[in-house]
Structures are given as C-alpha cells and as structure tokens.
Length: 111
Image (cartoon, rainbow, N blue to C red; front, side, top):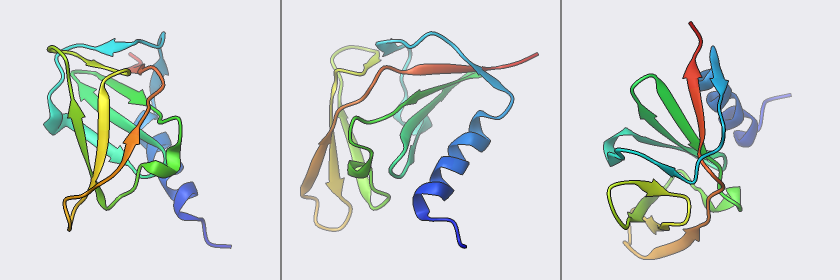
C-alpha cells in the first residue's frame, strides 16, 4: 500500500520534529518573519526561530492546501493564533478560504 498524501505530510512534520520536545502551547509567537514559515499541506504551519520550531495546526486541516498562498494580517510584531489568516489561489489571486489556528506548540531541540 502506498502512503496517502496526508500520511506523507504527517511523516514530514514528524521528521521536522525529530529530536525535539514539545513545550507549553502559546497564543502568540515572538519575532515573526514570514520567510521562516513553512506550510505542510493538510497538517500545520511550522515557524522556525532559532532552535525552536513552532507548530500551529488549523481547525480544519483540509483548508491548508499546497497550491495556496498563506496571507497573514497581523496586529503588531507577533503572530497570534487569533490573527486573520487567509489562503489565496496561486494562479488566480482569489481568496480560497480562511484558516483558524490552534495555539502554537513550541518544539525545542534536546541537548
């Protein structure tokens, strides 16, 4: 049996988090820079900052598609799970949906 796309993407996240320990979920993450944001289709948004990866899973994972662009309307210097996050079709530029995120879970490397 070939793994499904969802299984492959879950495995991709597991590989990113290998050797890391989950911390207490956070409502906001500091010092957000969009070029360090990774979208894992149907699974999560992953943001890297230093030795920490922050993982936020959408309430409706199917709304996080590989062919969409994530557009974040932030209020301040941090990214918060309550910020307005839209998805936009890469080709047409039309909005395809809105993401609602759970809290960010920090994963730090173990020494």
